[in-house]
Image (cartoon, rainbow, N blue to C red; front, side, top):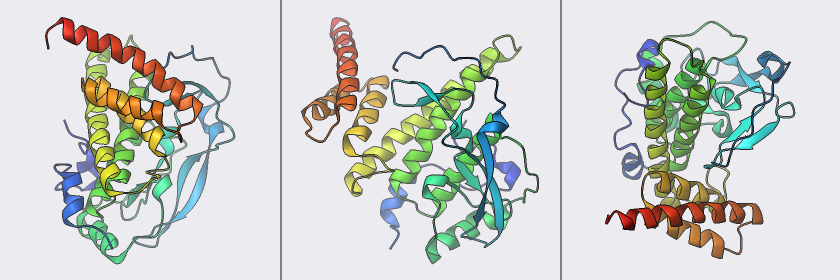
Length: 288
């Protein structure tokens, strides 16, 4: 299993996520408790609209479905800051993909490319891309995973910043979690699908952690729109979930001592600190 699995259907075969953050250095470019979800009467199509784009690689005009930001309502937030919305999963609509050349990018990072970035996409994606013609009313979770994987592939070949690749991986992990939550437990292959999505979520989030750690050392804040305390909180949660308790504790301590961290982030950090203390005690009790 890999983060770019399934992109063969678009003609992509030779792009790898191996050492994707180290490559950037070689070739630089000039759970909080969830509330019970309420039933909604709106259809998913009521939350989205087709937005026009002009591809920075091939110049084609196309439309991509986007979420009406004023329409969605957040009902809870997971421990690692993934927001949960009523009636729709907005992450399904964050990746923009040109149906002509395959260039894909998260909407946050949609902007003109440098000549070398454009060449990287053309040589590694567009030349092999199988054009897509259909315009769907909504994107399924499978559609969304393909689009996010395409965005990651394009970020790799255009030598995008570590923060961009890490952001894609973070959203990919959250998307896998949302996908798992949407599944019907009565389906025949439910258990195997849940296992597959949990494994992919972990792979995405592990890469997000690695990328953001890299970005903190090589880029300046804000990173992917996040200030330092906000990012450090997410890193602390990811580190804790991976068993890196000392790393997580250090990040939490930094947030609590920060003069720039707002009260909301500090409150969340205190909650994580309590969980960390329990985990550290359990680890010591086991003699690890």
